[in-house]
Image (tube, rainbow, N blue to C red; front, side, top):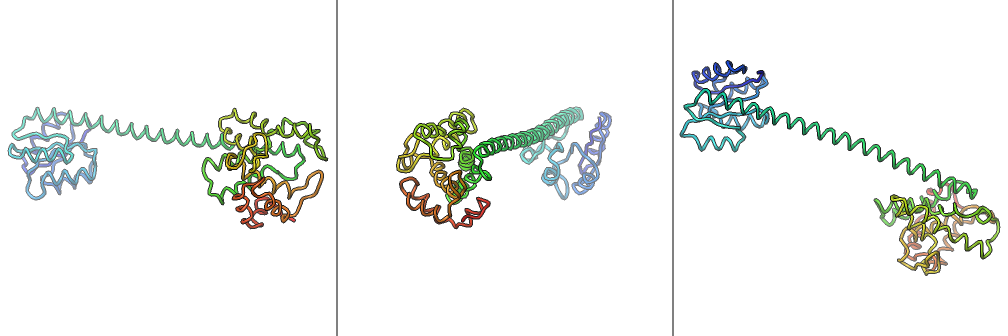
Amino acid sequence: MNEHILIVDDEEMIRELLSAALQQEGYHCYLAENVDAAFTILADQNIDLVISDIMMPGKSGVDLLKDLKQVNTDIAVLMITGLSDMNTAMDCIHLGADDYIAKPFSITRVILTVRNMLAKRSLAIEKKNYQISLEYKVMEQTEQIRRTMNDLHEAYDNTLTALVKALDAREKEVGSHSERVMNYTLLMASKLRITGRALEILAKGALLHDTGKIGISDNILLKPGKLNEHEWLLMRRHPEIGYAILAEIDFLKGPAEIILTHHERFDGTGYPRGLKGEQIPIGSRIFGLVDTLDAMTSDRPYRKALPFDSVTSEIRKYRGSQFDPEISDLFLSIPRHQWEECSGKKFF
């Protein structure tokens, strides 16, 4: 046995008797005649168990117990009490003592009690260390999962961005139309104090709004002139095509709703469902307006980019019909330079 035991008692005979018996059992014993001497030993030695008399001159065993449990909660404590101090002994148990024995005591009883207390202490420390190890492993695995999820999220975003750039390149966009309207949408969302998951859905919906054009032929999509009625009917299917592509993907179900409704109009004359007013998701109401901004301020096969003032005139003209009036007013309140910062270019 390697356990170290500190015996604290003002009676030398009891200290020596306990020490002799416990050393025969293989324990290392240290002796102290009072509380101050006990703490001197505790400062220099790793003590596993303290045996202390309760009633001693000066500081009592109760004082020792109080200070000891504040210093090291792992030390086991066995209190020795006289028959007249049983209430005090019970108070010691409430203060953190592990057990007590009454004088006169049997050496055999002391040895068995010490053995049981040290075994219990060993199990408690083992359990504590296991719990600490388990908590550390949980923290480590949680951090690994967090890193993996971040990497996965980044991979998703990179894949989506690459898809969008490919779609924009197909339409021979200068720069990325989809990324610009996403930035515009995020600016509007910040003014409306949209945050968290709702903001993430809005951003992805704006970025992926034209996904459905993957199902539209180049003859229609890249036609330099106006579309005829049949071509226009086919073009109008792209919100539903985009929705069908993305709605089955769990993390894109929210953005898919924006994709489906991004051509709805506030007065109910949009497509594909003819939704009206607040039936249209707020993300789509925001998007419908900023999409107009980008469409008008970008070069098209059939015309050059228009001045920013043309955009504000268009929004005022169709406020309440094509565009949500409150979102229109918010748009008009945002300084031109903030839109230019989002766009990465100066407007005419």
